[in-house]
Image 1 (cartoon, rainbow, N blue to C red):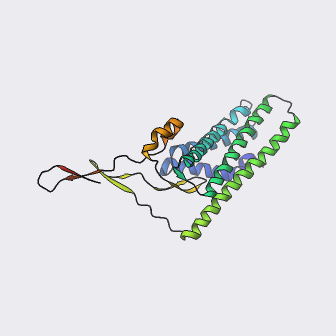
Image 2: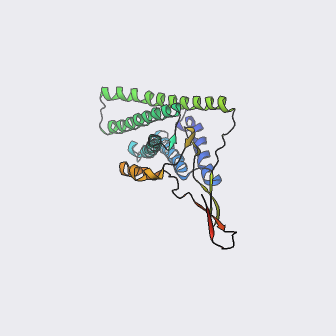
Length: 244
């Protein structure tokens, strides 16, 4: 059986994700780019294994996968750091899943780098081959345990709320163009994490966070101005009023 046939289920998922992001536009551009990287990696792998294209080296084949793993690791750092400073309110199971995902991504990157190094420096040593054989199932096991933790968290939420989505009121502000939603407490749906509660950071701590870490400026902050323009006064003066 050829590798193309073996990867048929993943072909369907990757193509479906790309078409859904381009045509339906229901996904973030970064997620569509990730599906494209996965599709590119499988294409290069099939050309290398099934068709024996000599121009393709293993280094070229694994470039899309390395970029994909780097994006995955950066997203994990963003989520876990957001939980540390109080933006993401992860549950205990979601936090455990994040740690397991981090271990899986780190071991996967090490495995790929070792494979590329061994491919360039043949013959391979026995110790490095044993380590690679350990890292491969370890990465899969950590990823599976993280997915199990998230599914367990979703199941407990289902038993607690009965499948009903929680209602999170949003703040409104009246601007010149009309009413606008102010980002506040709510829930966002993340791949491999499920529903994650989030809450904008206190603007009074912005300078402190940015001083400690520059990437903290990427997280949303609450608006410092609480007064909202509501229109002219009805007391005959025609001056605007503000509600507090």
